[in-house]
Length: 332
Image 1: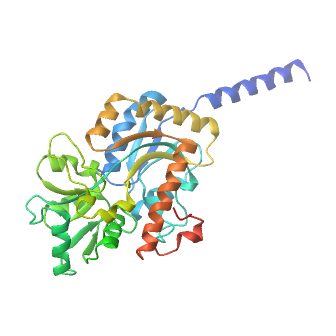
Image 2: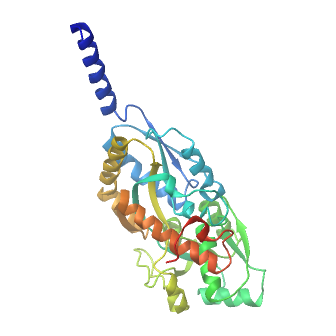
Image 3: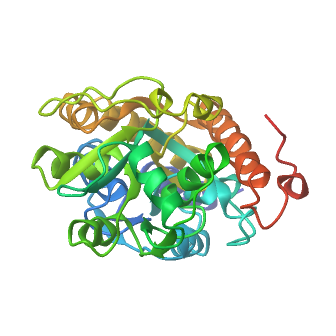
């Protein structure tokens, strides 16, 4: 090889190395699974500035709600696997297959960081006549099909918790679907629906402000949140519910599974730093969330266990459209 060719080859190699090391060399897009004001949106917008500082680039956040998360997952799945399109998601894709919403879940994505998990609360309007979940359930039994439950569609948190509750005490309500939690809670406060299970993160400020009344937390322990009394656990009135617990929503960041390893490593490091930020951790705690800050194999193990438990709950109460067995989801 001539000196000139050797010099050219060396320059190309150096250029390729510099290009690979440059990620990210432009702004990123963060696709939020749910609408503005919901729990997923709040968590995404809280962690994003700290991730931007670690990455040195802007992350432009875009809300793409609809289809119980299927709109956003399809959008990111159809984007290039280059690490420039991130999915800020929640738990919903892990149920898409058994509910016939989509033919894939998070197995197509790499978990950059599962930031934390929340607990759910059952809320009603501030002036509602019920002071406990049992009050509401007994009223629903007396007036089957008359009371309305706010929902975010099949596989959403309200639908899943409603299925769990219906498995331990049969009652009938009308499910009223909305695109995401924020308009659902607005409808609840306006008296258009009567009750709604929701992630504590989405309802905390409204509970503190007295716009909503919390009847129960979907856990075995009260939910101690600063600013209002502890919310009693669902197991206080329905001990049988304990077989499903702990259970709750979760929030995280994903990219396509086949994104280059070095890009995934850069994103993982940046969001690990972001999740460690004291300001972000305080926000999560104040909204009743439990920090996780896990990625890769550890996050995948968590996701598979959550999918197994929840898919089989839906199957056992007749809410699944397709058996988890078809997708190789093991019974817990």
